[in-house]
Image 1 (cartoon, rainbow over the protein chains, first blue to last red):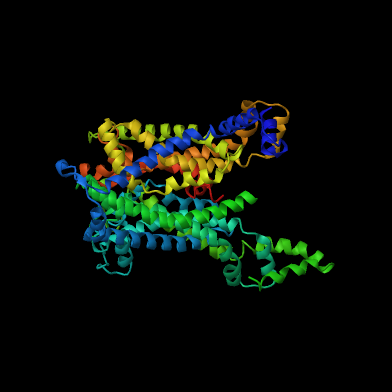
Image 2: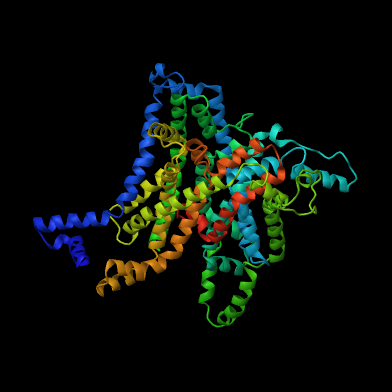
Length: 322
Length: 305
């Protein structure tokens, strides 16, 4: 019954003058279609959009919770402070370095791994499972392991292995680097690359496996070298997947809090914006300033997200056309 | 690319090629993904072991005694013991990890249930009987996911503080629900879109009720997808740190929050830290391996199958 009316109303031009009755029925039908969607939609608007509006408002206020009597309108001064304060500017810089280097490194390594795993070999399933493992350790736990079990300068695994290798050659003066205090940002980057490479690998592997094999086979029969096939067939096909991986990775890594919080507590120039914002409102109680920094992060994310959305959309259209 | 395409005409040649295709097909199935497979296999295995090494080391260390754990060079072959786990579960330390583990389980499971309750009808309205402008709605959902949590956490903290919802697990559950809802809607839509239209039409012509259609046609196709979505939502909630850190404290603190405080409160006992990391990662490792194939789909918001 309902479908019949739906069909008629959809091709509704047949009735030249829809009666009032028909129109209200059509409206009721449209609402019946919308009804299952509304709870989720309304819930999300309240829980995610409202808080951001509040953040936006607070970002224009002078508000330190320790001095409630001095709260008032601040104009753009919080934003000026975000862009001129040395610590916050450093945080913006750190965020960019961290995001770009982690995304690029994990994309390149992930691509290499995906190409290897695309081939058949003994124990491929198990190798794939091992490779996914870094992604499945709780991020805080992973950061703790990197900090204490791997990078600890006196008994971490990295220096331990160095000692062992050097002792094989009869040397008792192995190099014992202390990455966490000498190059803390590098330590954060390495641990994040380790964690995000499997994600890139999985996306690129999905891309490789959706590749139309007939053209590759045809090219092989024509005697094309593997490099030519990779360069002219595989890479163009993977482009969208590389973009998607890069952009999604960027969106997730810009927001990273766990690794910075656990590995270095934001020390020695490793505080990224999420960590700096957390500190600004949680410890310094500078609500207005933290909010302005939050808005800056959102603006940055919107720029990345616009590209990400476009990529997602093109893949999405491809799927819809299938 | 254009230089490679002229391969096609080959197949139009009759006769000898027809004979050849058989041998070629056999040849290529060995040739294409399999060429160089020993070298690729060895390389892949070496890299896989390198990537898994920290995880394997964490597991091994958790079964060592504290003295064997903190040695340089590492003592790989040291005796195995369950001491670190006994210590972690409070045999002597006095700090029980159970309340945070239970909080994490509560928050993750209940928010996953809530997500499913909200997302399944929404995905239905976006795929099987789509509303007008359903793509716009989809992208609205997605855009909420792209907003950094840190940009909304202060108002949430202030609201929780004024409403007395600070350190309340229910508030955290609502937050986790909103965090995972967009992903769930996107994934679920792609699963529901796989329900064959012909079957839906046939059931309508036969006069099947909505409930019957849901139960007999949609559920069987969508069930594996729903299970995978649930596992992924569970993983995200279990892993979450920032919101839990800001919104909870003593009563409602979750396992990741507990873990961050673990080292400072206990002093550094490497085996115990590893045991704690293993225990807290275990549910995610299980859920993740179970949902392996769908994991990417969840993280890439349903865009990649």
